Image (cartoon, rainbow, N blue to C red):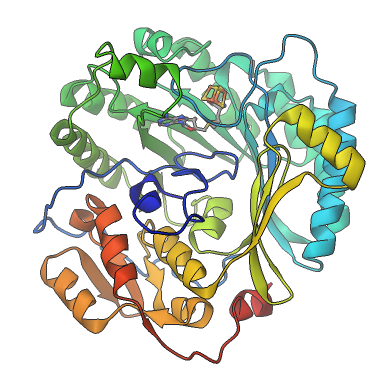
Length: 456
Ligand SMILES: C[S@@+](CC[C@H](N)C(=O)[O-])C[C@H]1O[C@@H](n2cnc3c(N)ncnc32)[C@H](O)[C@@H]1O
Ligand code: SF4
């Protein structure tokens, strides 16, 4: 879940995969927040001129497939990704994916799949036939929506035109490219294997092959000035079709960047500069017609990532592969599922037991409420207060909402949604904490997960 807030709520369950990994798409495929600073900032205009533009109560049902291998490990990254010097036994992984998908379908039968996300790691290291076999197995396990979104994450350095065409033939209809920076020295500093020229070529190929594609950039990099970021963003916006993910660099504990940072050898922008860079990001993307629909994700209306919307709207999703997270409503109770992280350990577990689940926790209604709030406040459309009441059995107190409204940090929309204003997004952790602390019970007779089950 979003970095903002992942640490703020006293629930052990709301920090899955990187701040949701969020920017990002970690094991769960959820993208990260820009680490809003914990400072105030009331009085700024609202980001959400059109907050109801995509308000819908159907969160969909997604399947996340984790490919845990990369050609090399980037020094800032703490996703579940591993480097293997020998060839990966793809047929063995396909057989294990098939078994685990079958297991998830017995837990959550009959859902209609609205999206699939092949994330990593580096899924573009998989052969197209491997991808095709995994997609076929998913389609055999659940009914597929006719317009299901099927995204594959790709690294520019592992991209080849033939592979993209092969992925398309296998059923992929959207790619998300990890470009990260548009200057070669910063790419090298980030430990990336590709050059700007390769990234541009990869974007060209994606644009020719797919109707839908997106790419990621990381900003607030060491030494990055507002002018440099503005210029880079202008270049990036010229290459965008309709979706762009912009993540503030997060220093992750246990990574080489964290060690350098602690030693004073890697200086990242201070909170004021980071806020300025965030503000530049909002202004430039709004002016280009691809405003933020989530803290770090920008799209034209209708081009949002449906898969990630399922997470942020607190829908159900199955996660398969090493270290994947899922949220499934089983017998009326939402369960938080996590598989074994180590690829070989996951393989062996699936071959032994038919699934690689290492954790399976029934969420309480208060935990569901925390998660739903944390996820929903990341969205420009905000949190659906009726869903919060149905699923979590709570609502934020009128006094807390009024106080935060007065401070200019939240707004209420006509559709009974609570929305973080642009100023509120700078202090999202604190907002989540204050609203969650103010929760008071409503309609205590409803059973957990009731609404999701009905809609699934
Ligand atoms: C798990 S990666 C997978 C994509 C692909 N392997 C790649 O790196 O191009 C998803 C995205 O997370 C973002 N990311 C990873 N670590 C990050 C960090 N420490 N701070 C900010 N963004 C990060 C990058 O933008 C990356 O494209
Ligand atoms: S290629 Fe992507 S997933 Fe792999 S180490 Fe780098 S950022 Fe992480």
